[in-house]
Each structure stands twice: as C-alpha cells, then as structure tokens.
Image 1 (cartoon, rainbow, N blue to C red):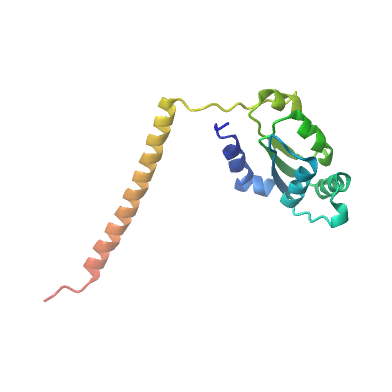
Image 2: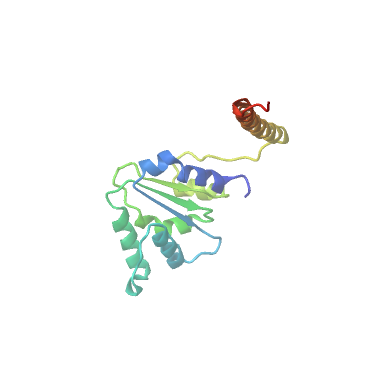
Length: 170
C-alpha cells in the first residue's frame, strides 16, 4: 500500500467531468475481513438507498442496488479489495446495460485485480524515485512561489495606486 491508489481513485471520482458524465456514482471500501451484508449496506448508503428494516438482507439489498443502477450510466469505486471472492459476491448487483458504466477497483494485490476482469488492463502504480519525488517537490515549491509573487505584485500595485490617489500633504 501507500503508492496512492485511493488518492488517484478519489481524484477521478470527484473530477468535474466524471461527476457530469456519470448519472450515479458510488464508493465502497472493502476491508481484508468483510461481511457481505456490510458491503451491501455501505454501497446502499453511498448510492442514497435507504432500505427498510425488512429489506436488510443480502437478496433484497442486491435487488435495491440493481434497480437503482438499471438503465443509468454509473461509476462504482470498489476501493482496497483484498480478494476476488469479495467481487464475486457483489458483482450481480451491477447491471451491464452497455451505457458506458464503469467499475473502478483498487487493490494492492495484482492477482485480485487480474481475476476480477482478466481482459482489462491493470494500471500498476509505483513509488516515486527519490529523484522524481524531489523534482515534484521542487515544482510544487516553485508553483507556490510564483503564486506568492503574483499576490505580492497585485498588493504592491494596489498599494501604489492607493498612495497615488491619496491627497499629498501641503
């Protein structure tokens, strides 16, 4: 862990184009030890589904999720999944209507990602090298310096205009 999978997924999830493109978005995090019922309840919450007490069983929750997504273009993020079994237990909840819906899965385990959808490419994140991290930090520092200089320039210009506009003491 720690290479930025969740951070990258969040940036995509909250991107303005993504929020515009997908009618429905949902996010769940799967722990190493999970309960199917808890996963489905978490997904319901993320999709603004409020099941009644009698609907809080696996079959009914799957049905509610499926109905909510059916006929709509959706994005579901399944974050930090540890086993293909977890995916296999919830995959029936997601209709495939050929509307461009997407399911984004993050996992630290390559075999889990490849078992979920063997024909899809896996994007492997790697830690930055010390050199690349240093360059990245330098760029961020320079960007902040440029912003600070722009702010100081604007403040200086405003101050000069205020001084020029004020009446001179006679």
